[in-house]
Amino acid sequence: MHQPLQPATDRLEHLDVLRGFALLGILLVNFEWFTRPLQAIVLGAEPELAGLDAAADFLIQVLAEGKFYPLFSMLFGAGFALMAERALSRHTPFWGIYLRRLSVLAVFGLAHMILVWAGDILLVYSLTAFVMVVLFRKTPTRRLWKWALPFIFLPVIVMWLGTVAIEASRLDPQAHEAVMTEFEQDEQAHREHIARATAIHAEGSWRENVGQRLDDMRFTLTYFVFWTPPVLGFFLIGRWLIASGRLTRPAEHRMWLRRWRSRGLFIGLPLAIAGTLLLREANMMVPTVTGALGLTLATIAGLLLALAYLSVVTLGARRLAFLAPAGQMALSNYLAQSLFWTWMIYGHGVGLWGQLPRSVQLVLALGFFAAQVVISVWWMSRFRFGPAEWLWRSLSYWRLQPMRR
Image 1 (cartoon, helix red, strand yellow):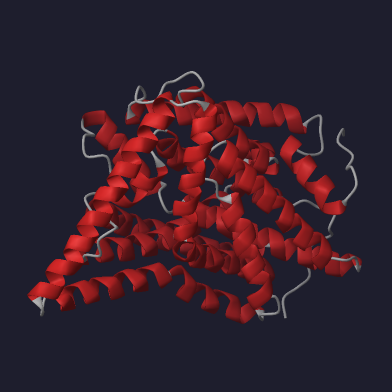
Image 2 (cartoon, rainbow, N blue to C red):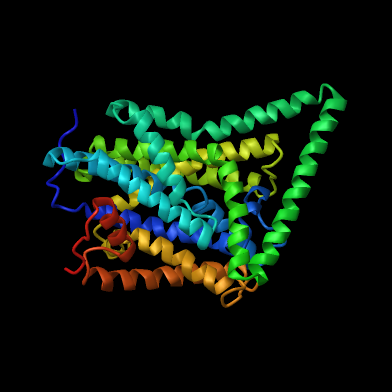
């Protein structure tokens, strides 16, 4: 049995710091997909990158790609566990409010995905959380991380199965040629979709972009079974971190945090470099040994570095406390990132599509996040919630929440 949480009135500031830190990584990763069609995600790095742009892209791939969505997912799972425990300690209803909370988040995500940017994660989070509630509502603490690992590595298993099937088809040259021809046709059609999306994002109206995002949504939901299992796995790890006390009483688990800080950095970072090098030229539409090996290394590295980042930030939370206000209004900041940059980049806004080199994107992301931190400090000194958080909470509880401090 784990010890109870500290009183519900005490906010765990290091979790807000972690959310603020995760926001930076999310922006660094998402910025590329504000400037490229989302469907290109399966085709690897942009082949024309060179010099500083290639270096910036490689740096983001190694340090951020596939590392911050696990961290954010862990924090989402941690938030579920906190809400459940605090409701239990107060003897207040939980499931009805939480399911309304997920439903409202799904609406937010759907609106964000269709009206603003196709790379939305909120809809995936809400749908995956429903799965978690159905399948793992009463899972004992000691089993949470054990269930998490198979889900996290399920895409890797699928990729290896596909690779083995492709390699086995070589035993029948005619069958192998037919399979590869089908892959080539699919890839050609996919590249045509990307070309159309590029033209619409660069020069199309907002209505045309909405139509494109509906097409993008079909692409995202087609791969929903592929994206969802890892998110579910990281949700379960987040719940385990709360239930085991590692994120509610970090002072008692400093040795564990230090151990995973070292493991994550000294093992995860080399694996991330190796996985990135293998995946840079990989076409994930066609299962290959190189792609499967790269995905394997990248998945292990993503888990290890996410735990390392979590450990580093938790241990240094006092020095990073300036990030807490940004984390308290993480939903508002996340939505603001895509609202602002799609307006700046897409043709129906300022129209900077194709004019922002990768190295410039890195600088802009860092500068924009710094501005968000400053604005968040100002906002949270005056209000109890970010604007999106206030709306989310009010709809979840079916009553307007007090806004001003």
